[in-house]
Amino acid sequence: MATPTGDGLADATGVATHAEGAAPGMPQLNFDHWGNQVFWLLITLVVIYLILSRVALPRISAVLAERTGTITNDIAAAEDLKQKAVEAEAAYDKALADARVEAGKIVADTKAEIQADLDAATAKADAEIAAKAAEGEKAIAEIRANALESIEAVAKDTAAAIVSGLGFSAEAKTVDQAVADRMKG
Amino acid sequence: MATETAAAHGEEGGLVFHPMDQFIVKPLFGGTEVHWYTITNVTLWMALAVVAIFALMVLATSRRATIPSRGQSIAELAYGFIYKMVEDVAGKDAVGFFPYVMTLFMFIVFANFLGLIPMSFTTTSHFAVTIVLALCVFLTVTIYGLAKHGTKFLGLFWVTSAPLPLRPILAVIELISYFVRPVSHSIRLAGNVMAGHAVIKVFAGFAAIAVVSPVSILAITAMYGLEVLVAFIQAYVFTILTCVYLKDALHPSH
Image (cartoon, rainbow over all chains, first blue to last red):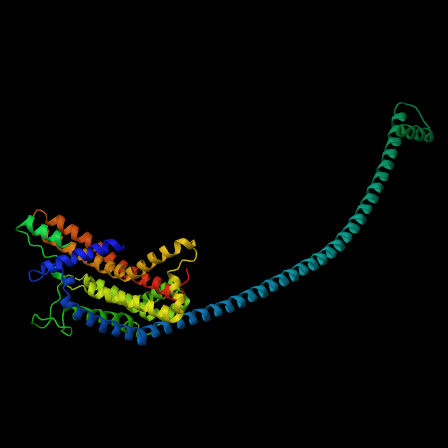
């Protein structure tokens, strides 16, 4: 960096002295104007420094600090609200679980009740059915007995009639015996 | 630069090139004499820089809004940018220099951008201006370093991490590089700004030829875009170098 700039300066100064009087070769090297530029530059820098250090920078710094504070507060508040939301969720979950347990209990109770009713009704019905069946069986037995007796009587009468019809006479006792034997056989 | 101009004068004949005329210091209210107190175009454009800085940093922030307006946002951005730079590069104990560094940055950046307005005068293209800026930094660093650390500040030139026989040689090199700092610091800024503006003027001179003028206008547009970059980058480079030098004053040991 050092050598090229050094060369440039030497070269430029040569040009400047050469161009003195005629068209200004490089206005940057017209040293007559340096005092003017330096004077106004120093004033400018002081003014800018005063504007910045007295007004602008403290103000911006305050704004930034305030914003950081606001953001921190807001984040804290958000954290708080989040905590509350978590608590609310836990309460909700607990209520839900309780309700579920309660519902389960009710279901079980109802089921047991219904079962008991059902059992009682079933037993009653069974008993009735049994009674009815017994009655029916008795009736059937009676009917069967009656039927057998009737058949025997008809058979005896028929047998007696057939025997007499053939011109034989038979003792009622013998006919009875024969019919009874056949019916057994 | 000047020799090139002379060559251009010779070759083109009919074309008129005055790329350096834009840098001439002129009295604003008549007369030809420029005394140190004369109100010149330098005064005008420096004053405009002050006005622009005042508008951005004071007027735009006057509402002190928690939710900033556009102007306030830019002012805060500039504040944060330079504050962070001072803190990161020069160290936490350098924040006392923050208003000073901010002053330099704001002046250079506004002077550079005002200089991009057509027909304007670019104050930072003058070595007189940049050398004063660089000398301010150099003197601040040297005086503050010596006042704070005394002879320890000279440890900056005595590289204890190097082998003993090499140290005197390194000390000479370090000393030279230290005193070349204000030169490179100032010439870099003025040179960049001046070269870009002069090149744009040269291209503008070629626009007088009808055939070449579209190319010339394209070239001017491209150069202008580059100059917008340069205007900011050079202000940034000047400021960050200031911070680097301040770091030397605050922490002279390597």
